[in-house]
Length: 362
Image (cartoon, rainbow, N blue to C red):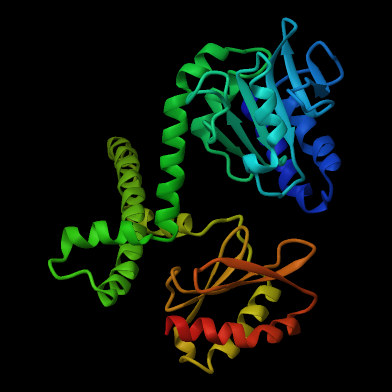
């Protein structure tokens, strides 16, 4: 298999097994070691290539270990710190990685939970690991633009100089893409105000803000569909030209149909349990607003329940994809807290919170 095939094979394994992984050691064995061996191509059983539990004493810190060190020519090239599958990744819970980076020859540090892989270097200050990654690989949603750079870290194509020289652009382009994606999903106040000021001459009041938050969200969605339509029409037009030359019939009805199909993520499957949970939340919320104002949107990682079909007015989220089910509720700062539930009836225990959230948005 070539590099992308190996990467996709591991991604398929992650999607199938992630809910069964309960510990950090299981994450290393099931996901991280296969990433090092199958994807990057290093022999995890050869200490000249991969050193597990790598030790390099740092100042007063003695005997600390980093999970893996990838070696080339007897020099440390990549340091890897692994966390439990699904856990949050931040430098606060990877202090060893930060300290070790400055006392070894490594130019690449990797922080991972087996699903998301964050690659760091020292762009901001020499021999000091940056606070933000220059490359992020999510095996549940692979960004094809990072694959060529990732392949440069494999044993067969190792090109550290090329990776480092491209790291700054990768870092900022990646961050910009993720921020744009966030704004398309949930437009922030600054984003809404920026576009509102382009088309609306009146004062930017709270009422205007609420109105244009919905409008900006709709305009962004329609813009993406229009872009897809344009590309499809171009492609079909080229095919149509060939068809006309060959005397075959042509049609212009495909683009709209295809775009509707593209708008729905084929990996998102709404379950009856999610719909039952939605109906319970809706029944509770209907004490405050009309039922027609309660909407639902299903995504890969959660099932969202919204007021006025506005993702700025999240009432609750149902996290039903794992073994343990959670009801996500929001405070006044729109910060989500997940509450474990054993059955759908437990949703009623949070009825007061749901009602107060709806009143706040209504």
